Length: 277
Ligand SMILES: [Zn+2]
Ligand SMILES: [Zn+2]
Image 1: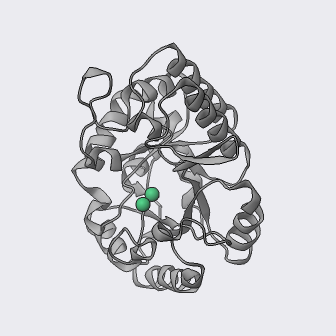
Image 2: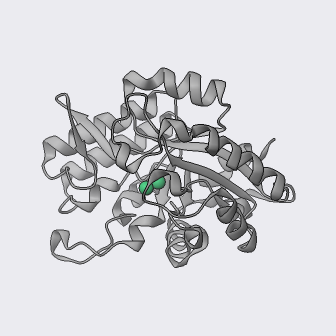
């Protein structure tokens, strides 16, 4: 359990973004991630695989509906095997507004999920879906991403939002338009009390050369400078797709970035609420 912790320690002993083999692009099952978490001294571990959707869309990189029962059982078994770790059952969800009742009534209601993560890998513009990581290259698309991201936050479905700076993978450079959109995301996150995630997975990717200089696709430093200025609540996540990624070098780098920018008590104290059984 999460006793004896102060929030300043808890935020470094938590990971709420963890996948399993069920999404077809990660390895390992819940128990293996828990063992790694335990070895690395974590106290709070959230399992958050990519959700299935009722119409089966994007199935090649998502869990199947038929695997939901096994996922439930894997989390239950891990809770019995690792009593010293607080284990939360979550799911990372695309924001598909027409499936809000599946998220709310089936996952959070019937199946008693502890939390849902808003993972906006895709956003809708003019009735078409576009990838956030490689589809944001013009101001019109950045504005559409921003509006969609804010509507996902406002839906009330999610406990936090994953990698809000995922668009930086293909976005060329910081400019007035970027400042305005990032400010809008961060102002809305603060007003909605919605934590934003500094996601270590972008540090495991090849660098991009947008704007003339090589940088990691995300986390994107200027985004987080605005988030810090807006005093947004935050968390650092492994986005682990392999058990060893629970607390690897990328996670350490993400922690260092968070520590250098954020006022830790105000940014991370919200995590304490997740430790109450
Ligand atoms: Zn994934
Ligand atoms: Zn993820």
